[in-house]
Amino acid sequence: DTGLSAFDLVFARAVGQGIFVLLGLLYFRVQKWFGEGDMRFWVIIRGILGGFGFCSYFATIALLPIGDAIALASLYPIVTCIVARIALKEPLTCVKVIAILLSTAGAFLVAQPSFLFAAKSNEAADTANPYAWVGYITAISGSIIGGCLFVIMRKARRAHLFQLLWSWVCGSVVVSLILANTLYSMSLPSTKGWLYIIGMCGLGTLGHFMMNYAGRLAPAGPSALLRSSDVLFAYMWEFFVFGQA
Image (cartoon, rainbow, N blue to C red; front, side, top):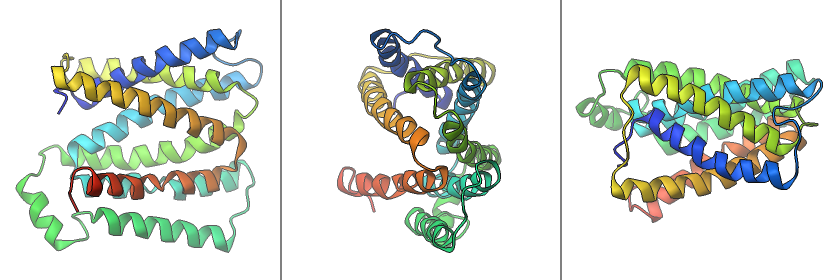
Protein backbone atom coordinates (compact mmCIF):
# COMPACT_ATOMS: atom_id res chain seq x y z
CA ASP A 1 0.00 0.00 0.00
CA THR A 2 1.61 3.26 -1.12
CA GLY A 3 -0.97 5.51 0.50
CA LEU A 4 -1.78 7.05 -2.89
CA SER A 5 -4.89 7.15 -5.05
CA ALA A 6 -4.95 5.51 -8.47
CA PHE A 7 -4.37 8.85 -10.20
CA ASP A 8 -1.48 9.71 -7.86
CA LEU A 9 0.14 6.46 -8.94
CA VAL A 10 -0.34 7.30 -12.61
CA PHE A 11 1.22 10.71 -12.02
CA ALA A 12 4.19 9.19 -10.18
CA ARG A 13 4.68 6.57 -12.88
CA ALA A 14 4.50 9.16 -15.67
CA VAL A 15 6.97 11.53 -13.98
CA GLY A 16 9.37 8.66 -13.25
CA GLN A 17 9.20 7.42 -16.83
CA GLY A 18 9.50 10.99 -18.08
CA ILE A 19 12.99 11.26 -16.62
CA PHE A 20 14.21 8.26 -18.63
CA VAL A 21 12.41 9.41 -21.77
CA LEU A 22 13.84 12.91 -21.49
CA LEU A 23 17.35 11.47 -21.29
CA GLY A 24 16.59 9.37 -24.39
CA LEU A 25 15.34 12.38 -26.33
CA LEU A 26 18.51 14.31 -25.51
CA TYR A 27 20.82 11.36 -26.19
CA PHE A 28 19.34 10.65 -29.64
CA ARG A 29 19.01 14.39 -30.33
CA VAL A 30 15.36 14.16 -31.31
CA GLN A 31 14.39 17.60 -32.61
CA LYS A 32 10.59 17.60 -32.53
CA TRP A 33 9.41 15.81 -29.43
CA PHE A 34 5.76 15.51 -30.50
CA GLY A 35 6.46 14.14 -33.97
CA GLU A 36 6.67 15.86 -37.30
CA GLY A 37 4.71 15.98 -40.52
CA ASP A 38 1.80 13.61 -40.81
CA MET A 39 3.08 11.61 -37.80
CA ARG A 40 2.45 14.44 -35.33
CA PHE A 41 -1.30 13.85 -35.23
CA TRP A 42 -0.89 10.16 -34.36
CA VAL A 43 1.83 10.85 -31.80
CA ILE A 44 -0.32 13.40 -29.96
CA ILE A 45 -3.43 11.20 -30.09
CA ARG A 46 -1.35 8.33 -28.72
CA GLY A 47 -0.40 10.50 -25.74
CA ILE A 48 -3.92 11.74 -24.98
CA LEU A 49 -5.59 8.35 -25.26
CA GLY A 50 -2.68 6.70 -23.47
CA GLY A 51 -3.17 9.02 -20.50
CA PHE A 52 -6.90 8.33 -20.28
CA GLY A 53 -6.38 4.61 -20.82
CA PHE A 54 -3.75 4.34 -18.10
CA CYS A 55 -5.89 6.27 -15.61
CA SER A 56 -8.84 4.01 -16.48
CA TYR A 57 -6.75 0.90 -15.84
CA PHE A 58 -5.49 2.08 -12.44
CA ALA A 59 -8.97 3.24 -11.43
CA THR A 60 -10.39 -0.15 -12.40
CA ILE A 61 -7.84 -1.95 -10.23
CA ALA A 62 -8.68 0.35 -7.31
CA LEU A 63 -12.48 0.08 -7.55
CA LEU A 64 -13.15 -3.53 -8.58
CA PRO A 65 -12.23 -6.94 -7.20
CA ILE A 66 -8.92 -7.87 -8.82
CA GLY A 67 -10.45 -10.77 -10.75
CA ASP A 68 -13.14 -8.57 -12.30
CA ALA A 69 -10.60 -5.88 -13.13
CA ILE A 70 -8.14 -8.22 -14.87
CA ALA A 71 -10.86 -10.06 -16.78
CA LEU A 72 -12.49 -6.91 -18.14
CA ALA A 73 -9.14 -5.25 -18.89
CA SER A 74 -8.12 -8.27 -20.96
CA LEU A 75 -10.85 -7.64 -23.56
CA TYR A 76 -8.78 -5.13 -25.55
CA PRO A 77 -7.38 -7.67 -28.11
CA ILE A 78 -10.94 -8.02 -29.42
CA VAL A 79 -11.15 -4.26 -29.97
CA THR A 80 -7.69 -4.16 -31.53
CA CYS A 81 -8.42 -6.87 -34.09
CA ILE A 82 -11.73 -5.27 -35.11
CA VAL A 83 -10.28 -1.75 -35.42
CA ALA A 84 -7.14 -3.07 -37.17
CA ARG A 85 -9.34 -4.83 -39.69
CA ILE A 86 -11.17 -1.57 -40.44
CA ALA A 87 -8.33 0.97 -40.22
CA LEU A 88 -5.27 -1.07 -41.27
CA LYS A 89 -6.95 -3.71 -43.44
CA GLU A 90 -5.28 -6.44 -41.38
CA PRO A 91 -6.80 -9.86 -42.15
CA LEU A 92 -9.09 -11.31 -39.51
CA THR A 93 -8.30 -14.98 -40.02
CA CYS A 94 -9.86 -18.00 -38.33
CA VAL A 95 -6.62 -18.59 -36.45
CA LYS A 96 -6.68 -15.04 -35.08
CA VAL A 97 -10.34 -15.35 -34.04
CA ILE A 98 -9.63 -18.62 -32.24
CA ALA A 99 -6.60 -17.06 -30.53
CA ILE A 100 -8.73 -14.12 -29.36
CA LEU A 101 -11.41 -16.43 -27.95
CA LEU A 102 -8.88 -18.68 -26.22
CA SER A 103 -6.88 -15.83 -24.71
CA THR A 104 -10.04 -14.12 -23.45
CA ALA A 105 -11.43 -17.34 -22.02
CA GLY A 106 -8.08 -18.08 -20.39
CA ALA A 107 -7.98 -14.63 -18.82
CA PHE A 108 -11.46 -15.11 -17.37
CA LEU A 109 -10.57 -18.56 -15.99
CA VAL A 110 -7.39 -17.27 -14.39
CA ALA A 111 -8.95 -14.10 -12.98
CA GLN A 112 -12.24 -15.78 -11.97
CA PRO A 113 -14.37 -12.61 -11.97
CA SER A 114 -17.09 -12.44 -9.34
CA PHE A 115 -19.83 -11.95 -11.93
CA LEU A 116 -19.15 -15.46 -13.29
CA PHE A 117 -17.90 -17.47 -10.29
CA ALA A 118 -20.29 -17.84 -7.36
CA ALA A 119 -17.57 -18.42 -4.73
CA LYS A 120 -15.75 -15.28 -5.77
CA SER A 121 -19.04 -13.40 -5.83
CA ASN A 122 -19.60 -14.10 -2.12
CA GLU A 123 -16.09 -12.91 -1.29
CA ALA A 124 -16.49 -9.76 -3.40
CA ALA A 125 -19.82 -8.92 -1.75
CA ASP A 126 -18.10 -8.64 1.63
CA THR A 127 -15.60 -6.06 0.38
CA ALA A 128 -17.66 -4.38 -2.33
CA ASN A 129 -16.74 -0.81 -3.17
CA PRO A 130 -19.76 1.54 -3.29
CA TYR A 131 -18.30 3.03 -6.47
CA ALA A 132 -17.77 -0.33 -8.16
CA TRP A 133 -20.14 0.73 -10.95
CA VAL A 134 -17.59 3.42 -11.88
CA GLY A 135 -14.95 0.69 -12.04
CA TYR A 136 -16.96 -1.25 -14.61
CA ILE A 137 -17.27 1.88 -16.74
CA THR A 138 -13.52 2.56 -16.54
CA ALA A 139 -12.81 -1.11 -17.29
CA ILE A 140 -14.83 -1.12 -20.51
CA SER A 141 -13.62 2.32 -21.61
CA GLY A 142 -10.03 1.35 -20.79
CA SER A 143 -10.31 -1.80 -22.90
CA ILE A 144 -11.66 0.20 -25.84
CA ILE A 145 -8.89 2.79 -25.53
CA GLY A 146 -6.23 0.12 -25.04
CA GLY A 147 -7.43 -1.73 -28.11
CA CYS A 148 -7.26 1.40 -30.25
CA LEU A 149 -3.77 2.29 -29.02
CA PHE A 150 -2.14 -0.61 -30.84
CA VAL A 151 -3.67 0.60 -34.09
CA ILE A 152 -2.53 4.17 -33.39
CA MET A 153 1.03 3.03 -32.67
CA ARG A 154 0.99 1.13 -35.93
CA LYS A 155 -0.18 4.27 -37.72
CA ALA A 156 2.69 6.17 -36.09
CA ARG A 157 5.32 3.60 -37.10
CA ARG A 158 7.50 6.26 -38.78
CA ALA A 159 7.65 8.35 -35.60
CA HIS A 160 10.64 8.05 -33.30
CA LEU A 161 10.15 5.67 -30.39
CA PHE A 162 10.92 8.37 -27.84
CA GLN A 163 8.40 10.73 -29.43
CA LEU A 164 5.67 8.17 -28.68
CA LEU A 165 6.94 7.68 -25.15
CA TRP A 166 7.19 11.43 -24.49
CA SER A 167 3.67 11.98 -25.77
CA TRP A 168 2.42 9.33 -23.34
CA VAL A 169 4.31 10.95 -20.47
CA CYS A 170 2.79 14.37 -21.17
CA GLY A 171 -0.70 12.99 -21.69
CA SER A 172 -0.58 10.91 -18.50
CA VAL A 173 0.79 13.76 -16.40
CA VAL A 174 -1.93 16.18 -17.54
CA VAL A 175 -4.84 13.72 -17.27
CA SER A 176 -3.74 12.32 -13.89
CA LEU A 177 -3.17 15.80 -12.45
CA ILE A 178 -6.65 16.92 -13.47
CA LEU A 179 -8.38 13.79 -12.17
CA ALA A 180 -6.32 13.56 -8.97
CA ASN A 181 -7.10 17.14 -7.99
CA THR A 182 -10.73 16.96 -9.08
CA LEU A 183 -11.75 13.66 -7.52
CA TYR A 184 -9.19 13.38 -4.71
CA SER A 185 -6.56 15.41 -2.90
CA MET A 186 -3.04 14.54 -3.99
CA SER A 187 -0.76 13.20 -1.26
CA LEU A 188 2.76 11.95 -0.74
CA PRO A 189 3.47 8.23 -0.43
CA SER A 190 4.58 6.49 2.74
CA THR A 191 8.25 5.69 3.25
CA LYS A 192 7.70 2.11 2.13
CA GLY A 193 5.56 3.38 -0.74
CA TRP A 194 8.54 5.16 -2.29
CA LEU A 195 10.27 1.80 -2.81
CA TYR A 196 7.23 0.42 -4.62
CA ILE A 197 6.98 3.54 -6.77
CA ILE A 198 10.65 3.35 -7.77
CA GLY A 199 10.20 -0.30 -8.73
CA MET A 200 7.00 0.50 -10.63
CA CYS A 201 8.70 3.30 -12.56
CA GLY A 202 11.75 1.21 -13.44
CA LEU A 203 9.97 -1.96 -14.54
CA GLY A 204 7.05 -0.03 -16.03
CA THR A 205 9.36 2.09 -18.15
CA LEU A 206 11.15 -0.97 -19.49
CA GLY A 207 7.86 -2.71 -20.32
CA HIS A 208 6.41 0.43 -21.91
CA PHE A 209 9.55 0.90 -23.99
CA MET A 210 9.24 -2.61 -25.41
CA MET A 211 5.49 -2.32 -26.02
CA ASN A 212 5.86 0.91 -28.00
CA TYR A 213 8.84 -0.44 -29.94
CA ALA A 214 6.93 -3.57 -30.92
CA GLY A 215 3.71 -1.66 -31.56
CA ARG A 216 5.30 0.33 -34.38
CA LEU A 217 6.71 -2.73 -36.16
CA ALA A 218 4.40 -5.70 -35.56
CA PRO A 219 0.81 -6.01 -36.82
CA ALA A 220 -1.66 -4.57 -34.33
CA GLY A 221 -3.77 -7.72 -33.84
CA PRO A 222 -0.97 -10.16 -32.93
CA SER A 223 0.70 -7.46 -30.81
CA ALA A 224 -2.42 -7.05 -28.69
CA LEU A 225 -2.82 -10.81 -28.32
CA LEU A 226 0.75 -11.23 -27.13
CA ARG A 227 0.37 -8.23 -24.83
CA SER A 228 -2.61 -9.90 -23.16
CA SER A 229 -0.27 -12.59 -21.82
CA ASP A 230 0.34 -10.21 -18.90
CA VAL A 231 -2.63 -11.90 -17.22
CA LEU A 232 -0.65 -15.16 -17.04
CA PHE A 233 2.48 -13.46 -15.75
CA ALA A 234 0.49 -11.49 -13.17
CA TYR A 235 -1.01 -14.74 -11.89
CA MET A 236 2.46 -16.34 -11.71
CA TRP A 237 3.76 -13.36 -9.71
CA GLU A 238 0.76 -13.60 -7.40
CA PHE A 239 1.35 -17.31 -6.81
CA PHE A 240 5.14 -17.47 -6.49
CA VAL A 241 5.85 -14.10 -4.84
CA PHE A 242 2.77 -13.54 -2.68
CA GLY A 243 1.76 -17.18 -2.18
CA GLN A 244 -1.81 -16.51 -3.30
CA ALA A 245 -3.71 -18.78 -5.68
